[in-house]
Length: 317
Image 1: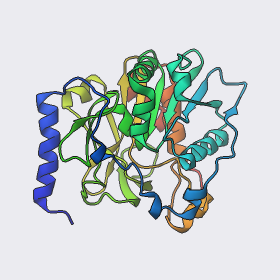
Image 2: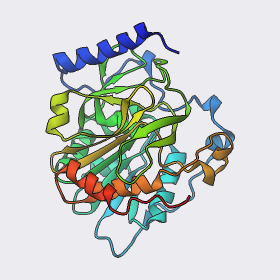
Image 3: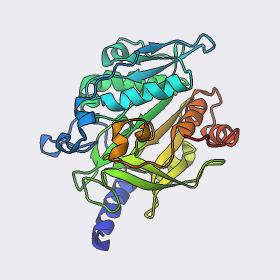
Image 4: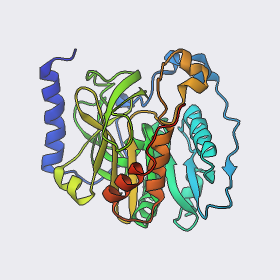
């Protein structure tokens, strides 16, 4: 159990960053403090080390006018990408993979795409490859009405500042959320750890608690003023410390969902289930989230409550 003194240090660092304001966003970080969005490769199950994604890079459902873009640039985790493909195929959503080169060329737009999924992986590689231009293209896409779904590394990438492994918040991601992404795993904040963690959720029609795979993902900390202006809805927190780790909010005309844990991973459907025991599926929840993100309604709070309240019965896994 972590000492209360250390909790105080973490809270003070976050509070200082939020209270004094943030400096201009810079895409730089010390090499000595390279983050770990997931477990070191030496600790991975063999299935993750040797995994090859053989699912199609594109699927078209003629009843849908727009596709979901799945990011597959440098650093994107192959296992996570494949499980997102499985999820999208399961619900028959049109999708296609998108690279950093595609985004830099202006391909990401609200005419062709409804949502951009940024999966888990290595967020610093996203920053390096996409650069300032890619960040601007993604922010423009969301501001014009697109949805952004970021898991683990994709969530770090979306937040302006990061705390951990450094003990002070540092400029980091593109700033869809002008807050702090707390890497509690690297800072050894209990109960953060690599593996199954318990999350308390406040979502109409869904369970009050989930066990979800956490591999170095963040919790999210933001100023109350931003919480009001962007209508930030906290959908889930880490039990029992109540740090927000599933959040949904407005950005311009678009909407954003950020998640520290890996709800896209279906442990029972792979050998990973031998290592991590997951009693429930988060796919029905992510499906409702995606419907909300793709909705033209500009009010994130009312949209997600409406969508999650409709047919919110969890099917058997």
